[in-house]
Image 1: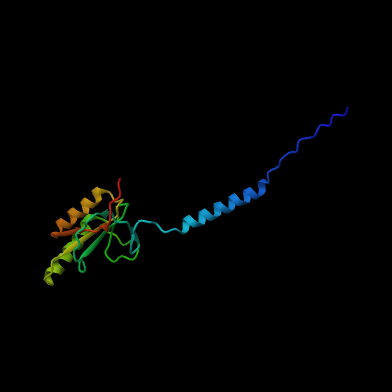
Image 2: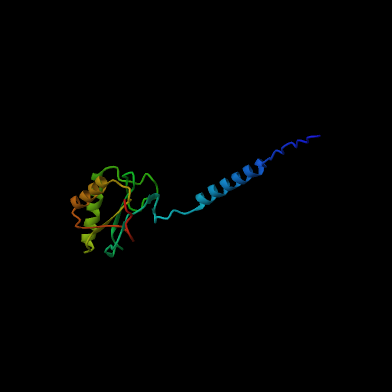
Length: 155
């Protein structure tokens, strides 16, 4: 009696094509995520990038002749109309002096001086209050904050 023993076949998985597919998927998702635009609305003003916070029902006011004060996330207070990153107020005293000149110019034109604070949503609360106090010290009563209309993010 002859006993015939069959050898087990070894099953080989083709691993190289799976690695190729994995790398292609990785490259695809890397490119897809870098080309995606951020969902939050960001305001690019001059060289500073400001992302203003959202508010449910903001009151809109006319700000055509208003002075816009930009506060970045790191606390920089930008000069109005600045074209370079060096165009910023070095001290709050310089901001107060500039706003006094703006207020006097508005008074000569018989206009009410209006200042809009455009603060980044990640700016420190303390810095925004410092700028607000500087505006009040310059004698300007009309102060407004720029926000995006919409639902505020839960945080």
